[in-house]
Image (cartoon, rainbow, N blue to C red):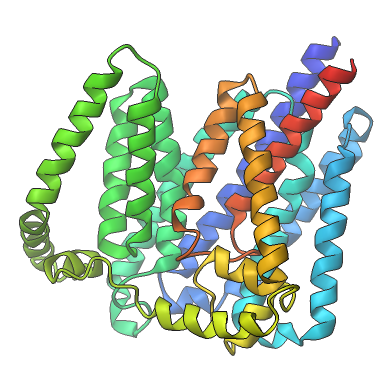
Length: 399
């Protein structure tokens, strides 16, 4: 067997594992966000998925250990993360806080393994193709969850909207938008429209912001000779939508009311409250007050859950600053930004660039309003991709 074929086979195996892992975790998240009855089994489902993934990873490493070349950077990074988390555990009894437990489980289930195996991949086109495939399965569970959500509203759980649902639904939406720009298939565009409707009806507002930013980037900076025409079209239709946004929202809301559906997002548009922060300013102000007392080193990973008494930081930025302080927190974010930009510039693979864009756009536009260090899987995936890129750039230079 030739070396190139062996490399393709290994890339397919790794990419398939990541796709299966993504589909399992996000499908579970969609289901538990739809009903309080399913939510009761969240911990059990997490244990089940973790058991399945452990077996998958063990079988993979046993079968392919000789073909794998690990990046020393991956090991050092995971070691640093493990030490940082352990040091935080000694400071606080963080496991008594349910939100921390949920986010930590998600980190163990998804983000931590990603740091190890994405750098193994050589051809990122294989990974993105598997992400496209897994998006169909996630789409099915998002729609299933939407129907469950619709018929379980009377139980008092997430009766208006679900942030978790939106966080899950945005994943296949962005991948199908990316796929549509690549293949120009109407089925992909139709799926995007269906997902967009479910997000408007059942999710919070931040997925719409992500979709808007991604579409603008794809239209403005995408390949093609009609670049200025695309920019003109975006501006034209953008202005039309802004001018008639309230009327569109009222008509759509009236249509949904025929089915006894009340969209929180549409209600905010109608009442001119689209920029309402849902109390985030108070949360950020409270957390900032604590950070000001320890501005240099912060309180350690997981501290925001403790400082807010089992509350959420509602912002990756605020969670990072709480964990590392202003000095090391800004340094942490600065280094992340630099290595991401360098990786984007250095890579010659348009598929790698597309993946950095996909996960970057799901993360950066909402850095001050959503997410945390442990729960932002997109951040860790970008880190893994940058390791993959920089390790190969270094290898080519040495070679």
